Length: 111
Length: 120
Image (cartoon, rainbow over all chains, first blue to last red; front, top):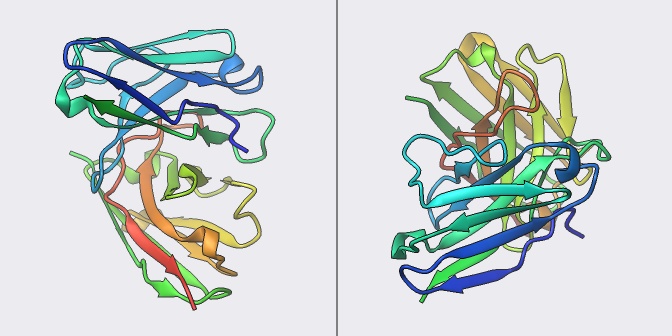
């Protein structure tokens, strides 16, 4: 059972806008920041959004994050082929003895 | 630039033990919390453990508590994960990652990972 629920897959065509959701609870998303990671095969995971909606330097402004209540979303506008990857949300959870938790991941396909 | 290089991954039998290491450079190692996160085909990314800057505080995921031990040597800029009682579900790619100054800081960047296989 995954504490943070993500859709297993998402897709879009080049130029489209796609969103990936991350649903949690009051003990995790509802009371802590959310970070989003991009994972490519054979590559180290990389943060693309941190503290709900902040973009690290080097991440295109096509990437944005939002949060409302106990859910968070990652939006990618102007979809590019290089955006095809697995995306994970992550946050702290005060109800768990181990503080950090990741979502189950969403595989984004660029058609 | 931050570099994190994991090592120690291997094929081990169920019930066996393994020690993973992570060599860090490019930042003041002793100023940051450090994490181990694993990636498995079934669960994807799974947070495993963290250790505070001075090593005085550690946290573990329920799935590994009492079997894994995280430690660090700030004099050698090194992070370790001692794994025992290994199960098939522990197999995966283990990443070392830099955290923040406290346990709540963003986990990034990550190393390239070291592969652990559990098989008889």
